[in-house]
Length: 189
Image (cartoon, rainbow, N blue to C red):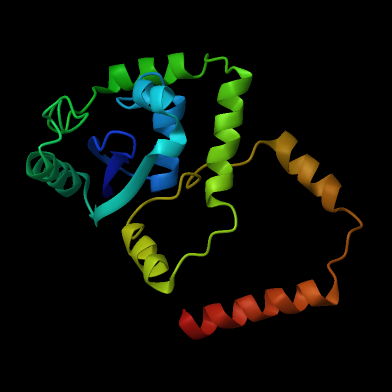
């Protein structure tokens, strides 16, 4: 869990929030979801006028929510002249989450919105992550269950993959890369 700060570079106002995913994913959600607290502001000022930064990492949601509240208070981002936060660490009910999810899937995007989404993708393209950041990211994912844990591929998908791979042999270079990967797992394992 991450607590982050978004800054509007045009007027200096800030927003404090928390996310389970990456900061880039969170920024994308703010941009794409009309239910997001920041949706209208990002539309008004443009995605290029917002900077997002990590304030802290936490192992539990409770810890992250508490830190979010502390940061909102410390930055006074609930004051409308300083920030965009409306309340301290609000949490939606499961029913509300389902309604939001259902309506956000029906959104049709304009060409301008699609262009902004494309720009969001280009912001991260080719960027290198430092070893320190990699370590922090790795630590932040400890204990999280992968999205596909316990899910099985449907038979139709398995069949498509089987057909696509039938008759294809990996190159010697590819085989060597796989071997090296397995060796690293054994050594680090």
